[in-house]
Length: 503
Image (tube, rainbow, N blue to C red; front, side, top):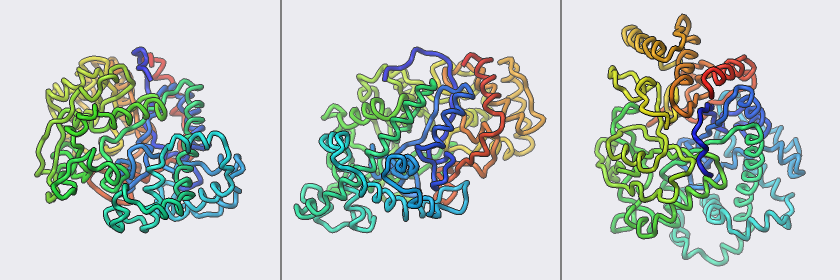
């Protein structure tokens, strides 16, 4: 999609997983449509979601088993019931979790697939749309990989029987016997796309664009490392992954972040004209999203590589990435660069060369430096996306309340000065007023786009934090909203802000 003519707009960060639903996790059903209605009432023009990929290690959507697969947990059963593929009892009588505020991934893993298999049993495979989908071989690699995952009790592919570790030598009898199951896994993607496209159309009818999120890396246990490891990744002489992805110590972590993902071999990819990457970007823009936020954008300039044997991310080194060459042909595309972390002149040159807006995160603005680029008064131009915080930050309320007394006074002094410069009312008698002041300050800023996590709109505390980087826990990626959350008058307040600040 071509980038819109530049104008001011605002939006909300709301992962699909966090939407209200009676099915254990947010889905593409009535909760999603109700949220679009709420966005429209609030004057919002962008809905930012997190990666739609199947979750992997630690339930993270940034550790997926495939770079372009879609999370079948989000498929809505009520919509399948309307299609005649399920009965109500087949999903409503399942206990999807005890806490409506938390996703229970264990129960989803236990029950979701069996319900979807019932839908597949009733599905007419002579359906012309389905036959066209199969003819294009869409998601066949994903279907084959997931069939093998289930065959080996979801163990990593490196622990499968040797003959199955090489996709070129799969036994013919296995492929024949597994044909229907492979189609089932493709069916999950077919259903997702059908529901997703209907939801996107509804959003567009209400003037709302959907911003997706593309993780830069894939998981070690993924379709890509299983089938394309020689073409895509840095390997040692024995064909094993030699280096791991991560970032050095930064604002998120004192030891840095050791993500563990495989590192791309950019020399090999360059020889192919970066074909795999370009197909990935094109597919996301043409099929899945109106706008794509590319995660960890700085790695396209230089990336941080950590030895396989390292215990922390302190031991890594910087290596050259593909730079702007990879993005030739995408200069006018609707892409947002996640340019957080260690930013240097090389990253700034890459942003300039591509023309993509970067991110300005308010919670990173308070290091005592009056020239901090995340302070709204220091935004150099309008070509940026301003956030209160991201999915990796604590909520705005928790950020403010977690300050020591002296630090809080300094924060409020800077906030007051920012409000004075922007001619924004400075209200801080209550934490709710303080959060609203910050949001209004960003709305007033020169940033073309402002995105606010839903938790910050509702002034929620740490209990609503979505993810704490470099940790694995039942709190990460599990927070959910309930219908009651949307009954307050926040939509009217946001609508008034968008009108006041011409968004």
